[in-house]
Length: 367
Image (cartoon, rainbow, N blue to C red; front, side):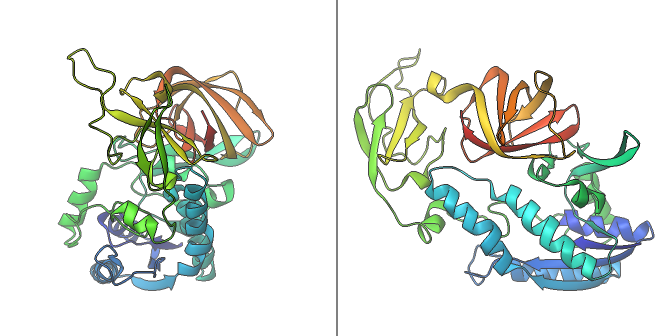
């Protein structure tokens, strides 16, 4: 079987290709170039990543293809990313990047190369499942809970999962690095990439300002409407943000020790261009026990049960939270949590699980 592996220059995709080659698959590596605006900047590591991929492919003994999806990325991912920020929401580009680039453009291109499957270095698992006499594909969490990436993959479809392999799903990160080191792959200890998908880690506000010009407005206390300062644009702030408000010295509520509590972003009045803030990490305005999500994707192709106990993540780093789906109608889902969740943020994804099975989810519209 021919498998095309999406290779990024990191240790995870390198070991993915290595394991598949050892298992007897006909493996080809594919490097995707998806960002060109400032490819020569200190924040864009595309050139070094390609050098690393070429070196890994040489050691493993597999062919390497290079493809440029920059136009598709800009049209399908980055344009939506900017629209969401401009609307006052905080999107997660990794989610859209996976569904539109890594598992659509990449998958289509791999099939044109004659592949029967694609593989990536994501920490997740795919399991065939028989339901009413037909085979479905379930997306499962990785064994390494600290690295699990199923949250970012919840928009995948049955057709995409049927052609996808995640060889690292049963491994822990330390094992992956050990395998790479023993195989003589120089990326064994390479630092994991962070930042915006395919764009990298950089000063975020300065980067966003290049595409969305400043739009100054007022910062006001949500509780009493006091004018506290000025912001440069609602898109530069997110719910729960503490740093970068430049109002830390203002007096107000005190904690038990008599210290003045920090200010946090609690809301955005987009129409009035007002940033709303509250004092104290535990302020009620930062705690929500319900949310409404739209742009839903259920991996099995059917709605999950309502009034059934599931767990959900309203953001990636949040531990699984017990919840119920109260209602699914008109392309929206209403989710109620057993305990209030902190800083639920419109634009982020809420992802629903039944034990280790990722059922799907949607984009948070309101909380």
